[in-house]
Amino acid sequence: MVSKRSGVTEPFFRDKVIAGVRRACQGRPVSEDSLAQLGQRVEESIRATGAAEIAAHEVGLAILGPLRELDEVAYLRFASVYRGFETLADFEAEIEQLRAERSARRD
Image (cartoon, rainbow, N blue to C red; front, side, top):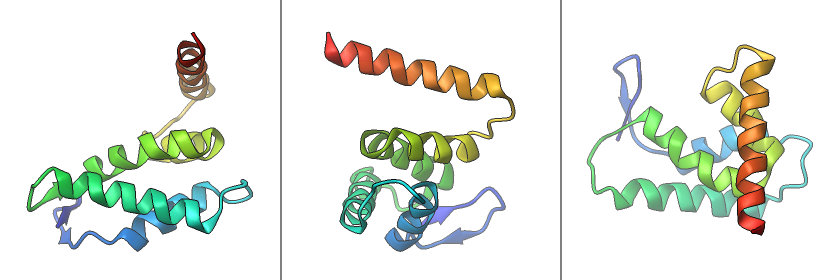
């Protein structure tokens, strides 16, 4: 079960995760198969916690990692909504973090 900020609790639906990520991936070279795999990874991550109920915020966090690996532009789109980016500086900080992580992986 997923508990939302409003206090409402609803079942976890992988399709809902995929639909949200699909919006972030619009116009990007991301296949339906890749979206399905991401949805499966998120669901497995949620189930691995063993918790009967998880906050919607935690579901969002579980999406960010796999989405970053899948497509950085889609990741920025999703993160900007999820984390509530309000200024250009918010985007710049996130882009700088992506660059730093990419550079660290190369070293």
